[in-house]
Length: 174
Image: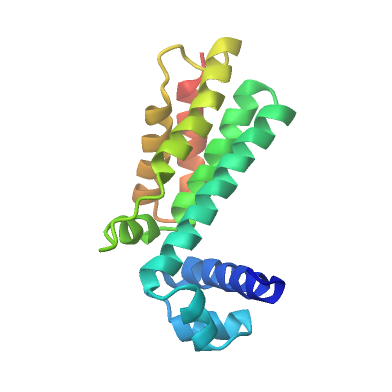
């Protein structure tokens, strides 16, 4: 891909990420193109369907979470790394409400295997925290992922979600 084409694609993904976080998966594609500083034709050359753009945004957000898990594992103690990553995952769930469901229901059926990537990234953090004795021995990665997703769905505000997560983190500790 040419440098300018890659730059346009990156700007489109960044704009789409911001607009979708604010307006949800049904956000205007024209607004996304406008925010990226490109025409609608450029958007459609890179992403021929809404689903292809949503998939790119979702996959990019998941990859960011996976990178964050690796970074936290290197710079924080195991229990703190897991707690910080859960906070990041909760923010992802709150910000991308509806995006995952829309992507997974897309007719193309292309599954970027995001769930496996999340389980792997979170699983490493859970294993480290269990080995360090900072979380209960019976805690599994599925537990923490479902916990954060449930909090995001149940909370009526981001502040409430943060509070519920802090309560849940106490319950995970040994």
